[in-house]
Structures are given as structure tokens and as C-alpha cells.
Image (cartoon, rainbow, N blue to C red; front, side, top):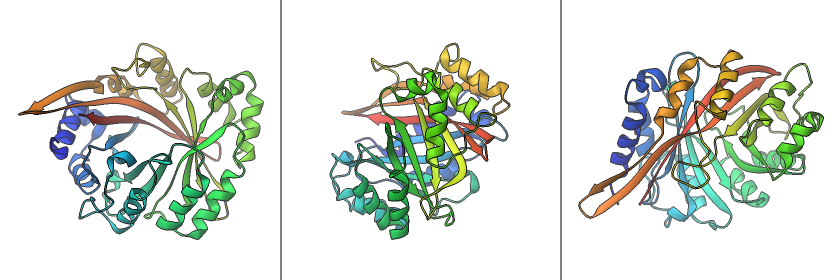
Length: 332
């Protein structure tokens, strides 16, 4: 296979060219490259997310996701991977690909610290015991119990798609993201009070004069909505809620209805800007989209990048910030 660090360098260079490094990425590239190198496991190119703020000083954080089917040996991990991540990767390599999907290492590159990344498990289905085992392995039994308490309260029609821990944030507990099964988002559009009740059921006050109008507006977009929670050691949730909208599939696929600044995505982003959570840098996001093939001798690989998510956060019902996530990858 072509050298993975070379492919990463090419992906970043193409995403950040034409002035986008100064506009979107800031000066985080050297440290992010180090984080990428120390995250490698198996032999395949991992999935990479660049997390980019949409207002304020430009910077980015890095997420590196290893797919289970790409990890044939749990020993094939970068020698400089931190202890917690290596433990998680060894555990991950022993699980069935029918249950676990990806293991993500998430770096606060913008803080200058890549020594203790967050470790997150992405699942294919409702394998609660597997996720509980993961949390007990990389954190402790308290985290496992907190997860089980939380998922016992999530509404019918929600699925906890990933869970993770933040070693550098010992007081945060665990992070859990929930996606909605078929029909639930449309049900929220038709009856926003159901959305309020479901959020309240997991511990988020979405009263009509604060959070609910935001969430109801996001549910009305054509993009799938996801909810992210910080779960405390007793299984309750902290007062911060993350809401993401997914811009669907990568370019070149039949289902591509992704980021179009002149379409639904542009309408959404203009709404976010009008709310004061973004400036006009979002207009450059679409220009990060590409799909290219590189050939060297008898090897070739197709690599790509596209805006995959918008994420907004609230604390105590008040909006905090908006971020975009670029998803990058490589296929043989």
C-alpha cells in the first residue's frame, strides 16, 4: 500500500490550499501530523476527521478512526501510541467486526496536547454489553455502569452509535452520541413537543423559550440529526448538549446529497451565521471537497475529502459554538 503519511499529507494539502489553511485550519498542521502518525494501527489508511470552528481564531482538532475489518492484528499499532489508546486498540482487535465498527482517537490539537487523546468506540448496533466492556477496559467499572444507566433511559427510536472517554478530562465522565432510527426525526417535525419530552427524559431541559426552537429548526432540515451527551458517573447528563447534522454520503456515490453552499446546506449555514455562531468562512467548506487518484509504480489509491457534519452545542440552554467536520479517507 502507498505510504499512509504521504496520503495524509496530500489530503491535508488539498483541503487547505488556496488560502484555506489561514482561513479554516490555522497553525495546527504540524502537531496534527504527529497525532496522525502515532494513531496508526493495522495496515489500511484510517478515516480522518478535521474538526473546524466556524467563528473566532482558526484552528482544528483531529480524529483518526480505525475500522475493525482493517485491523487484522491487534499488535500492529504505532509504537508511540499512548497507553490508554494502545489498550483500547488491543481490545478492539479481539472483537467481532459484526459488532464493533471503528475505534476513534480524538486529539485536542488546538490545545497543544496530543499525549492523551479521547478514545471512542463506534458500533453497528445495540451491543450494550460490548460497549460496557469497552468502557470498563479503557476507563473503569464506574464508566461502564454510567453508560448502562444512561442507555436505559434513551427514548424508543434512538440508538447510541458511539461512546468514549476523555483521559485528559477526568471529571467529564463519558461521551455518548445517539442517532435516530427511521421516522423519528419526521415525527419531531410534526410534533416538537415529542422532541422536548424525549430530551427531558434523558435529562436535558429543552423548554420552549430556550433550546427547543433550535432543535426543532434543525430537525426540519433534510439532514439527519444526532444528539451528543456528556454522561456523568451516576448516569445522569451534564448541562451541555451537542446536536449534529450529517451532510450524508461522500462524493461519487449514488446517494450524494452533501454540502452545497447554494442549496440546503447553504441555507442551514446562513441560518447559523445569522444566529451569530459562524462567520462567512463556511462558504469555503465546499471547496474542500475532492476525490482524486494517485498512482506510484504498480500501486494506486483514491483519496477524498468532504464536509460531513455541522455540530452546534448548548450549555444550560444557551448556544456555545458551531463547528464543521471534514471527513477524509482513502480507498485502494
